[in-house]
Image (tube, rainbow, N blue to C red; front, side, top):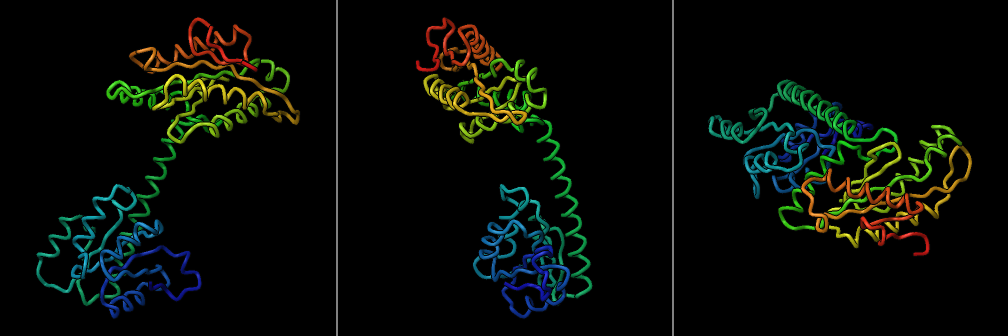
Length: 325
């Protein structure tokens, strides 16, 4: 690997040079020193491995004719990548040929620019600067879009998914369950006596309680599950590939974990409990995620009517789980 002589080279934008000529690599390193951190791969295969391993690389300069994997083949792999950052990475192609064939093929494969050997220092710097700034602008825009998308789907207090994200994700899971006959369950959970918490400790204390419970829900669910805050003190969980028994077991574990936790709210140690309802697609055979959530909600309030701090998995109240059950 080649890099600039600057003591702060690790802070400079990283460029990957793909070139089997050591002489050219040293020359380009000299041309770009002080402005960029130049990394070197001897061929396309080595370059592809470096691109996969180092997300800090921001631009590629590649030769065409190389052993193992040519510049054209590397370019195609980059543009077909499933990684958006890699797929959109600026690529400058260089070659010694005066024929337009390589140039046209490179542009056809998605090259951003072209530079001929022998490399002119000023031209190289100008082209690299332009494409690096353009790539930086695109990355900043994509980052802003991701931040806005996250804002639109995230509850600002608990950082869980919000109601909108819950139903969007739920509709996808419902579609998969209906099409392939997969299991799919929903847990609806509501903090017991939450108004009393707010009245006693203020809304700040209530917020602290919600955040603490949200943390337990995230810890106890899988990465493929969706945990959301869908109301003031109501949470809901989408559980793909989970049948009614599995959802009931998880619901009881969550109920017990919250009951046994001692929460610090407004500098006071308090106990909180949850009432929980469970609904499963394979049993209910509803058409929409909204209908499935409504069933889980009905069972949640049935659990409350039977004394709170318990779970309910049927409409008759006979399958309730409570402390010691």
